[in-house]
Image 1 (cartoon, rainbow, N blue to C red):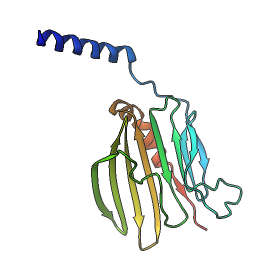
Image 2: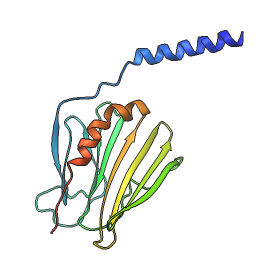
Image 3: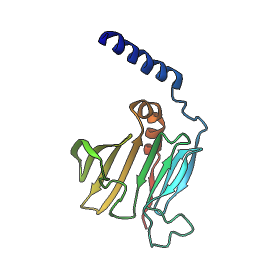
Amino acid sequence: MKVRLIVLLAAVTCGAMALAGPIKVPQKGFTTYKGAWFDIKYPIGFKVVPRETSQDDAEGRSNCLGVSFVSPDGLVEFYVYSPLWNGTSQWIQRREGEKQTGYSRQRSGQTAITYVTRKGSGYSRSYADYENSTLNTRKIFGYKYASDAAYRAYKPLYLKFKGSLIQYAD
């Protein structure tokens, strides 16, 4: 009886997954977001969500130091934090109910790079924090995803997003 129940549950679960089908990632190209001290390309159709802002005169640009870009299906969020100098990102702070599942730290020249992954209810968040204490500069890239399948499906877009950052100085 137990074996039949397990087989039935597995069949129902697999059937539900099959009905959901593969994740369809939008392929509409990229557009440029102009932050206070940076430009970055993000996928067309993603919703822009301002996070941390600057009081500095941004010379006609957005005054955002940190901004998220959420996919149309809500399965992923890309995040960038790129102030003129160093600063504090609220996006990377531990949220209620999250458990840290990954951490590593390395150096590349004068830059310390911290990698963190946290799991919350129905999502995971990973970020890479690049901090150069000698030059007093910082940039952070984050990736929030609803599932491993969403992570894998959107990863090529995330890598293109991450590689497109252009930082400006005063």
